[in-house]
Length: 158
Image 1: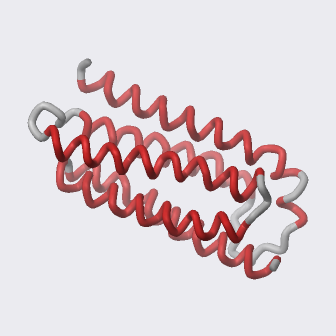
Image 2: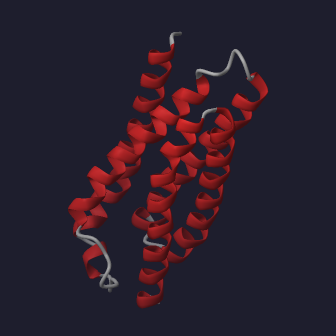
């Protein structure tokens, strides 16, 4: 597979996972979520879809760049992509915990683990491809903000 196809495959995978995890979100956005007390820094709902779409694209490009180094650095690439897969699964799980199960506390505990996996993925990626590492910084920043937002929502609604 050539380098552009690898990037395209991972971007499509990330967007598909984002789409399916968003299905857990959709019904709660109009029913349960509006009933919660939210902090003043809670962004409007319309912000989330474009931000997450861009982050999924950047994640996919980063993982594709790393995957493209498989011939020259097989073990490091395999390790990095395992962390990538774990964080992507945790990313999807968060939506289920928070929106489908209506459990901000469990989602808060899980998002801390997600943040750690994103950070480790960033560390592994930047060792292999500096651009891939840089592409993970906005994701890490957004999930840092999401963690504070999740904690605030849990605190205000306990």
